[in-house]
Image (tube, rainbow, N blue to C red; front, side, top):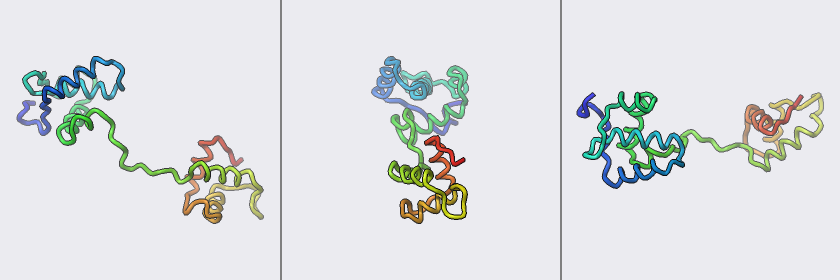
Length: 155
């Protein structure tokens, strides 16, 4: 595909190109970052660049053309740093239970089950954590995952 039809054209400055070349010589970088540097160097249309098309870059680096397009897009829209480094997750949710809350959960699991039950269930544990004001709200699934992480078994 000719460069005129590409939506995201990589044009590295001399400083950016030199920075990428210096980084590739270090050899002690994450593989993903190294791959993105190689994509940008090959896709560069400046005078010093290779000006390869996406298919040739993908075939040479044994990756998909979508990866090449995503790296191009990240570089054009957000700059070199974003194109090389991982973005922070947008849907990150902090844990409901911290260390103190987990300790309360373990203590509850080890305690005697409530009257009328032979053992604690996940839902009963979740309800009890809310009832004791240890957490504002929590699902039985969050309780299950926490117990699994700590290798605890209700059975």
